[in-house]
Length: 227
Image 1 (tube, rainbow, N blue to C red):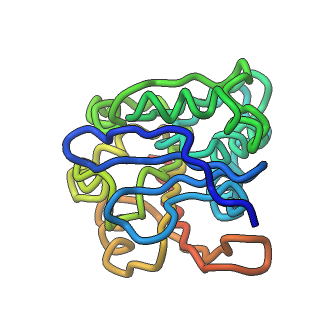
Image 2: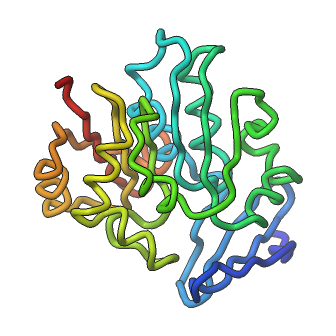
């Protein structure tokens, strides 16, 4: 097996550490300093796709739907969201690290089919927290894959998203019957309670890292009721 080749690095703001992009033939890997193993691999993306499919299932026939994706990663969540929505819809992806966008505009983008080239996709550089704090009911779906789930490891500001205040802001950023979908490395019963306290109707799905195999990940589906 050929060794991994280091392609690029990026510093995560606010002492979040360093991301490094590697490549081996058509395989890409992103690793985080101080964390053992890979953060992402271009061959393991089923749960990211399921996040979008579950979070946007209610929008397949909705014209002018507005979707917010938290975290670009390797582009799989964005690509799957684009497949779920209509031609008139808009999918905004909030990405904190400019280099991650550049990597997806380069060779890494081939892995997910270059979703950034889709005219319905729009990049907002910066912290998704600042966007959510506006609490404007602009979105029909919010898909969060910004970290390891409710217990963040890459950026301390992500913890705010999963706090009581953050969940209330997410609730207020959704239109009636909008869906918040949160990717997590594992289950978290306390997070379910927090979501319900924020006013959401909650269901939980377990998905695999690869179709039918691999690690089990958790998708929290929190629907804002019609009021």
